[in-house]
Length: 81
Image 1 (cartoon, rainbow, N blue to C red):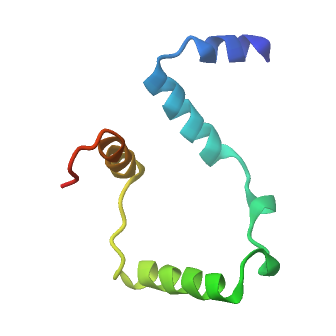
Image 2 (image 1 turned 30 degrees about the vertical axis):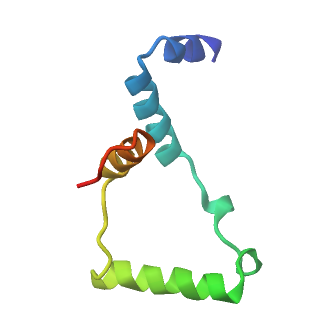
């Protein structure tokens, strides 16, 4: 296992980020699922509203790359398109 970590540490920043996201997607987060008491009733209402907006297409979705670009521009004080 140490050799895998050593090889990963040799990757470029961009490759490490790509590896991070790939590993994150590969992990099983079923145990991390929200439980009823994790959110307030108001938070559940908002979550359900947003989920419905995604399903019916009224909420604009963006890719992870678009989100990262947005964050980078915001961090550097650049205008977002």
